[in-house]
Structure formats: C-alpha cells, structure tokens
Length: 301
Image (cartoon, rainbow, N blue to C red; front, side, top):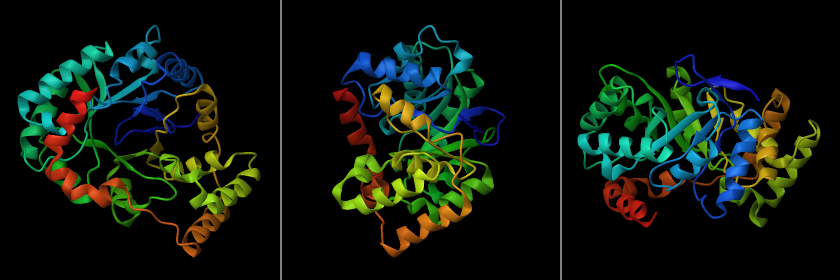
C-alpha cells in the first residue's frame, strides 16, 4: 500500500481507503471487511453522521492501535450553526468511541448559514483537541476558496468529491487548484457507483481489463489506479466484502505508465464517455435545501 500526505501536513494516509456509505446491511461481514483492510495496509476510514455508520466504524477499529487508523467523519449541513457543529462533533466522538477525530469534514455546503460561523466552530474544535484536521466535501472551487478565506488559523486539508473514470468534472479546475494548494482530493464513488460494471459501459470495462492485464491487474484495479495516479488524490471505495477489500488494495503499489494513461484518455474522449456528478446535476438545489434533506436523512438512520 502506498501512502500520501494529507493536505500540506506530514500525516500519511493510504491512497486507497474505505468508504462506509450504504453500509450497515450485513454488519458482521462489513466489520470483518474493514478489519481485513486495516490488516493489509489501509489506514483511512471514512464515515459521516448522516451515514449512520459511525458505530460500525467504532466496532471495526476496536482493539486496533489508534495510531494505525486515520478516522474521517462529517458534520451534516443542518448542523452548521456554531453550537450545532460542536454538539455534532461530540456526538460523533461518542459514536466512534474515540477521543479525537483525525479529519472532520463539512458534508455539503449550506447556503443558508454563513460559512464564517461554521468555520469558526471547526477551528474551535481543533483548538480544543477534538479534531486534528479540517476538510470539506462536495465543495466547488469557489465554495472551497470561500471556506478557506473564512478561517483564521488553519488550512483546509481535503475536499471529498465524486470522482471516477466516468465522472471527471473536477478536472476542469478543482483538481489542478487542489494540487497547487496541496489540498487532498478524496474521491468517493471511485467506481461510479457500480456503473463501470453495467451494460452501458461494457466497452470501457473491456478496455480497462485489457490494459490491466499488462500489469496483472483487474479492470476494477485499473480504474482505481487511474484515479489515484494524481499525486494528491486518494480513493475511498466501499468494501463491504473481504473479496472486494483485497481487490481494492491491489489498486495500490503500482502505477499505470504514461502511455497507458494516454490510451485511457483517448478511449474516453473518442467514445465520449462522460457523466455528470451528483453535485453537477443537483448541486445548486441540494445546497439551497441541504438543511432540510440532510436532517431528514439523518433522522432515518
């Protein structure tokens, strides 16, 4: 497993992590999968209060040395007022059964609450030792810049966004900006929510499989390696089975060469393979109403 610095820090995180969105279906199986991932080099585990999986992460890291895992979670948009941020963090600490969260992220922008109020609370949490680093999720370049400018002491170290071989909207401006500013891109849905394996993208899957065979890797591993080939990008595929965890881990420790990266780029361009992210399609509406839907989703957990 290869590791990368998160943001402009000296903290090392695995370039393949584990995402826990939509987990909680087969708890024992999922816990075993996460434990297997940690045993085989993964140290980055991502969750969120909205996912309702913090308790699952807690069980997965029980009896594991704390320094061997880097825990990231998120505060929901309806908790962006100062006091609510503090309360939500305390709840997450309790759910995770840890004394300090390694990376605390704003889950989505909330246009109805001043970002300066939210970031003030986030910085307070760092000062109090409850969190180590501050990140955001689903933030555009403008939103990311606004959040950073609202901070007085600390830097934003990461932006978690949808990014995969099919959904590449962040390459327009956000990816280069984050690379320049040393902000880690945490790619969620790095396998396009399973679309990579659908009939629609069968030709792409076959092409990736052909490329992968040169390295004795699968199409899945090739698709993940394509994403983490960026020096400041990591991927957090969901891995609810031990088989998938091992396959995902195999996406690290090697690198697609320049010629193969170019071939993949040409294939995507020639076949007009492109899909908008959730943020691109519904972003403006979701951000205006984030206080409402995030509260409803959190209450369902």
